[in-house]
Amino acid sequence: MASMTSVIQSPIRICQLPTLPLTPNRTVPASSVVVKCRSLASKALNTPLSPMTENRTVSPSVELCSKAIGLLSSRQPLTSRSAVRRLVVRAAAADADGASDGLTGPSKSFAARFPALVTGFYFFMWYFLNVIFNILNKNVYNYFPYPYFVSVIHLLVGVGYCLISWAVGLPKRAPMDKELLLLLTPVSLCHALGHVMSNVSFAAVAVSFTHTIKALEPFFNAATSQFILGHQIPFSLWLSLAPVVLGVSMASLTELSFNWTGFVSAMISNIAFTYRSIYSKKAMTGMDSTNVYAYTSVIALLFCIPPAVMIEGPQLLQHGFKDAIAKVGLQKFLSDLFWIGMFYHLYNQLATNTLERVAPLTHAVGNVLKRVFVIGFSIVVFGNKISTQTGIGTAIAIAGVAIYSLIKANLEEQKRRAAKIPAS
Image 1: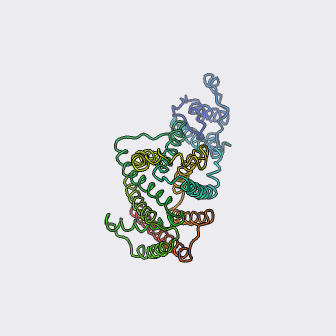
Image 2: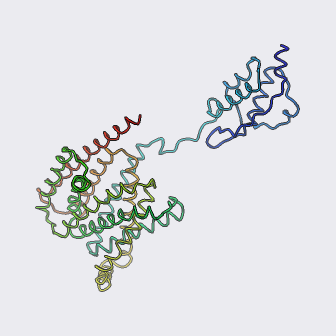
Image 3: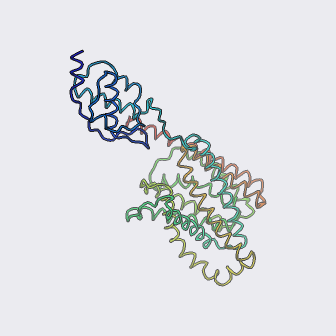
């Protein structure tokens, strides 16, 4: 017992440890932990603390776990200062891990507890906003057939939305430099061209027919990858594109609203969006998708303004605006332009955010279902009369896109797994 007493009465200096994290939102100085440890050890061995230590303030919110207390209250002799340091560190680490300190971490958010429900809501809003946009957009073209100017309005409202979001910090604006600007410029140019040509097609033909033609976009993606970029496309992918081409051809031959302006514009849109995808892959910079889309919209707006002014400017000044206001009134005219621009930006932004939450396979299925929703709702809302052959051709084209998307998603997943094997 004398030997034990001599060991305990040896001076114990406070270890200078950095602040120890207890929970993500609470920290406690290491000195408080040391004093708590010495107090418990002294009580266990009936050894009083020195007056200097007794006057030290100990944080009452710090409670060591039972395991740590057991280590300190054991009646084994403490042979050295290093042993005390080790006990203090172990006790503090156990308390920081929250083993039995009674402190719980912050409760999970609703999105963390129900991720599937949140993702489903994202998909629903993506489809809903897309359908509303297409309906309102076509209604505007029925009395204001100026697609170049309307395309500018789409982007202008979206850019205004982005500027306000940046101003309030939702999201925080990512910095832009010369290198990033050079990367995003070709993406924005292709985005502007594809967007304008899509609107030219929407104004010229039925919405359902434009979306049927745009189902050919995977074909252009595959052709560009094979013959321009030199990427080998599997035969199974080419085979899955056959029903897409067949279905679009059947639908085009008997489409009651067919005209070459709408058809060619939709095809150019397919090509533009194909190259946008290519340049987007080269422009992967680590910036979040919200900021990337915002910058893309700003640059694309600058590309859209000159052709709108040159092609439609004189007509708009002479009679375009006057005719639209005479038909629906100034208030409805401005309201329609604002809301189609807002819905256009929101559905594109929401689509980008939604696709970040899901795997490639779900992404592919989501895109196909979105096109089905738009085509179906546009036929019901506008009462478009379609022939039996057009309906069959549209169904075949959509089925082909679904098969192509599933095969491509599976191939990408296999590549991703194969790339992980050497790394592991």
